Length: 124
Image (tube, helix red, strand yellow):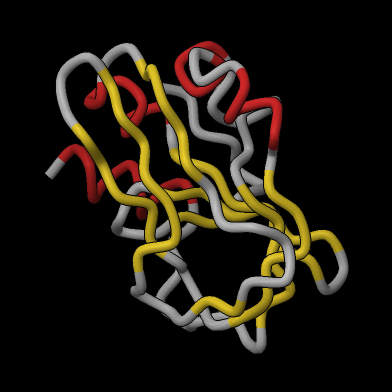
């Protein structure tokens, strides 16, 4: 599996791309594969305050229902309506068009993983 090296990862199978003071969050291709065909995505509205570890959304597939967790404290500045309208994007382009939310984090946690560490985590 190819993991973009410029991203950071969480143990909850989310990826994070930093652009200035905004963090774009999505789920990894590994998570998308484990879910199977995604049929429903629910995301928080812009302006929502999130707390690290709290459930901020839901991703349903033909196999299961998964929860989306906030990787840090912050404020949602944008949710990806394209994924809500076309959930299959999560399977088609998890590191691109299927980003889920953009958040202005209060601070980034120090336990984010780089691509190599995340790959080791899912292989272990």
